[in-house]
Image (cartoon, rainbow, N blue to C red; front, top):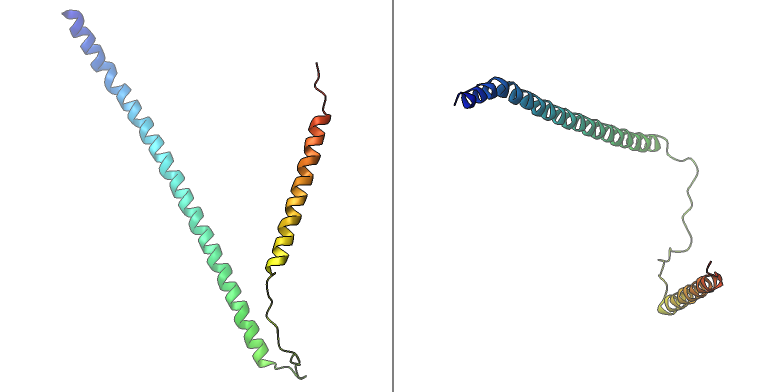
Amino acid sequence: MTTAIGAAAALLAVGPPALAQVDLRVLRQQSEIRQQQEISRQSLLAAQREISAAQNRYNTQLTLRALESAANPPTEPTLRPALPVVPLRGPDAADLAADAARIDALTDQRLAESNARLRAITPAY
């Protein structure tokens, strides 16, 4: 019985400081995590400020360029194109089919070359 009481007393004497150390470690880890989160947040805010400043500089340049061109109209007449602009058309079905056939032929050729190289390799015994 005295051993049990002695063990309980020893546990009470050693237990709270050990628990306090664990709590301090946990608190330190939580503090480090919060600090890393704050650093990340500050970095994100700095990046957003840089992006905003760059956008503002770009908009200012556009405005200044427009004001400058309005203040200094061209002294020589500008030429207009004589022919109307023809909208670009995409490739027709025949062109697409020819391209697909050419891609298939190139793929088959590369596969045949690769197979020939593999067959040329002699196994080492």
